[in-house]
View 1 (cartoon, rainbow, N blue to C red):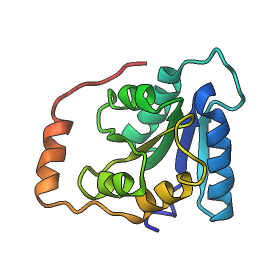
View 2: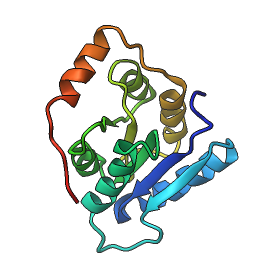
View 3: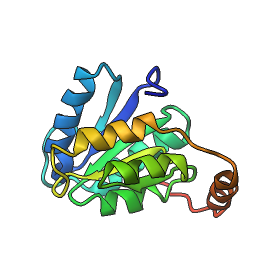
Length: 155
């Protein structure tokens, strides 16, 4: 797996909390370093945009190179994270979508739906995402187009 020397930042709202805890156990078993971006305990009143912005801003600043983000379906968290400049959050439901998100889109945040993704599938998705590397080439031009669009969250 590439970039294992750099810890993965992982965060979720309440709807992704249980799956996030499962992922933390999995990463620990695989000796993949990670750090917590929240939420540190289950709180049904938390708001996914706040966790997503916090994680995404740490990716954008270069403090972390990759993150894993969860909410109930993954949709809201991916929308929020993608509002931060330089973040390419990919909502993935299969190993192939995770792999392609790295190869072609250079995703730096993997987004999962805590309520809609099976525990059996999650390790496969994470492995595919971690093992793939950006191909560059024609895809780099497209990433530059996305990065120049200038949509920045300020939370």
